[in-house]
Image 1: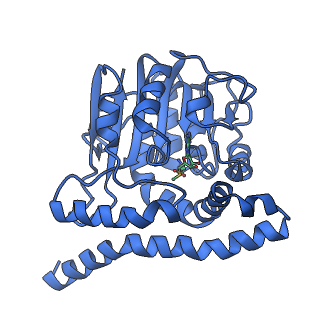
Image 2: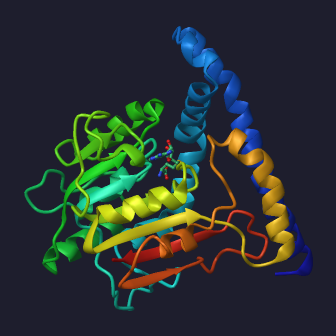
Image 3: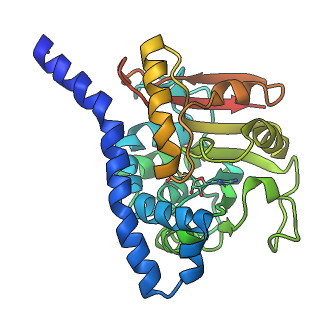
Length: 313
Ligand SMILES: C[S@@+](CC[C@H](N)C(=O)[O-])C[C@H]1O[C@@H](n2cnc3c(N)ncnc32)[C@H](O)[C@@H]1O
């Protein structure tokens, strides 16, 4: 690639987060109009509730599906256990990590953008078998998993406190045929074991796998709550992570990210850019194995860098 093309790419990459904020801002008038039409005046008067409704509109309708398209080539292999040091394994590379299985906690399920990936991992006799939306690759790998005899998913708890996301999440569950497997938990992770807050309870030490996709940036008090989530995992349980994190690679990108972060949470539903999520996860408790890294496709001008990988307890 020529120097000119590389410079143009870098400029576009550096500006793209501002465009993202602009697109979010453009969803606010529509959100307000919808709320007026639905006569949900109380939401308009509560900054927190309005923020949730705005984020539901922006993420569910615009940002989420685009990110889903772009990130699927990393997230699907992640859930299949086919990543190492932040990169996706090649076809002929042997995976050292099993796919998601057993009792799964999907943290911050949002509008259910990843629900269609789960059917191919569901254990035999536990409901859905395949989803029309999932790619053939996912179905093929699901079939490989079944024939290799590994245990499949028996239950998914989709933890999502933003009720504005629930109608879309419910539709995604129905489309995937997962009504008997996937249960929406309508509270934040901090209230998971509080049966006075929802009509269910998840016991500490009962979860086989945690899946967190772009959500640890939004949870309150991450040090405390990630440590709490760690306690829900069984010994040997796995935490599959795809999260955006603080820039660590150059002082000017760290500075640039900090500048972005002044505006970001106000437009993106409280999401914070500068969290050291890998460090927080590492310090959540003792891990038997950690295999995580930044995806190699991310360039030096990535203002919203990610970590991808699996922590095994
Ligand atoms: C950026 S969205 C990502 C949603 C989804 N994982 C996806 O990739 O489309 C972050 C989600 O985390 C949720 N969230 C915020 N606070 C939370 C909490 N305390 N517990 C669980 N989820 C939370 C938000 O409501 C939001 O839906």
